[in-house]
Length: 112
Length: 116
Image (cartoon, rainbow over all chains, first blue to last red):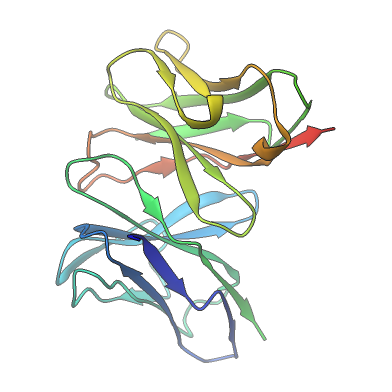
């Protein structure tokens, strides 16, 4: 079945550590997105990519980095510069011709 | 700039009662509007979308929403609540059809609780 796979489901970060969240899709979608979800704040866009080897900052990109070397993959790195990383992270994708976003099941990141 | 306001972060209704979740938007151009649902510890699923066709939009699971330009609203309704409707609901707006380089702006969400 086609879909978006995020891993791991739960992730713990130590002080000063970089961690990488995985997002893989087999829907042949061109566009991919990373959102951060905090209670009571809805979803905020971190980074998005419309095409391989290209990506743009969203509203809250500071302390995060991404890459898009393959169409299927859009990993997110939470760097040590992100001082408040505890949140639920959602990856999404869509085609160029439809408005519907497809979401993964999310990664809960916590700080030790 | 586009924005979305969801009135009521928590809504409780009895099973079988009407569900009404409120969403108001702000947009400088005709908007594209969406409702997404999130079940616990999961991603979001599209319930329905308004893309400038019919103003009354029907979605999955018996939900529908009406676009009212004069009120800048896109409220979500369901005639009879079911226990399985308990979830968090997000309204979202975009100012472009496929929001290529434009972003999709989400509201802060409404948590719906169904009372047996």
